[in-house]
Image 1: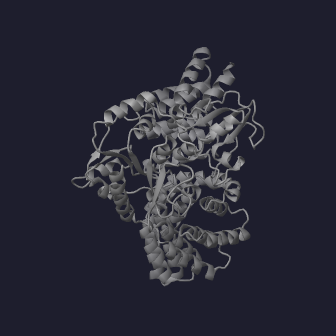
Image 2: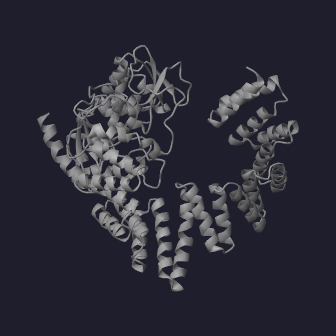
Image 3: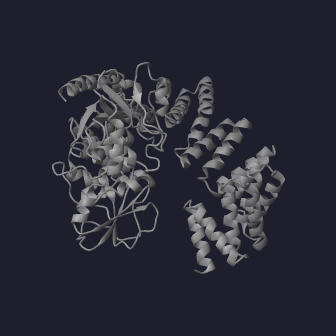
Length: 619
């Protein structure tokens, strides 16, 4: 491999986050070609990431000695000096970077941080302003400039930059939180000077900030206060409706959306969101009418297409649902493309097919069943998945090879995204491939856990109550899928029952506050340790009498290994659990327990305790 090719590969590995590999490659490059400034630069960046600032400075200075005209080298050296609070050296390096490239926004941003640390606020503001002038979506620069303007008493300008920060990065929670007090102050000022309409609009913006950080109740109060000042603001009615919908106030949300449409008949966001609320109430025909109206207003409205797909799938209309579900890629905001020809249903005999997993771990566990159908069509099936699923998917007999996400695929002919396969194969609600188990846990682990758990002379129920939080803190759906562990008290109180903890990491803090007498068996930190992610859990599931869990990866895994499962669902569940039935086409061993009304977990577990008493007596 030539030096140029090697440094390009090292740079790619660094940007992928494979820092150990990048460092090894760069050290090999430097050993063979000490004058390679790019390798010294990457070594400096890696040292900085590893917290070794002195080594970072040495490597970056060496890169600059070899090529003093590269502004990036000076910029990164300046940032490193800044992290060490060596501000004079940092300023000198950053000003050199800017002299070499005045349009290097990152150098302007770093210089602004240094100048602010030196209490030179006017100069810092100028540097931040230059950064956002170069890159108007530089959210960190907008945020820092907004903070600085607040300190300088320039309230309106500060709010403007903080709002531009969240426009550039909608999930920028730090900026949303910073906006709350300035927006409240500004709204109060506007009302005080006699401009209630402007005050209402500003309170509406405050509601958006509160809602963005998950404070729906507070947002609802603020929206209502805004509408008391001016009831003619359609956008505020829409935002109130969205907050109410997320808070489980579905009928109230529909009233808010209706009011928005009265004020603005072609209000797309009101019409689309009203469709979601109606679907959540089980009024799917009315919901579909709203989606149709929304698409008449904008035929390419992504979130409406996605909502319509989920509604069709939830009601079992797979014929229309699967094609529409392909809009999920635009809804998620990233591309489904891969540098191979995409499989669209043609003959697979003799081909090697790369199956790319997507979405959450539970989604992948649910749909990996399709590997068997692809193999039956003559394909050699290679599955690309996230790290936690590697070991588990090796236990799927229909999977020929498993590789990690972003690992180079071994000579594949075609690729397909996993959740596109049901649509390509034209899966109907009456022909779901539901043969279980399709994941076989390790026999040695099953025997080990059966031996350990047979010492428990009660009806053993594995429990998991918390779904893994999503990365989007704005509308974290796991908060609605998850239930509090303490809600299971009616089950824990049954004398013939032993609850066994299947929960890992998220939600474990709830154990410490359980009421007295709530007996939960802990299996220890070794679960899914040396054996690999999900491996012990899969074996434990096969060693229990019953599993009771929320809509999470554990629920999907229980279904995949064929464990009898009672799945606890919110009033408005995900599409895959269909609508209005207590069984499920995807998992024959699942019985579904749904909230009778939004937020009512007590009703679910009271019903479950009654059934469990009957179930165990008849067993």
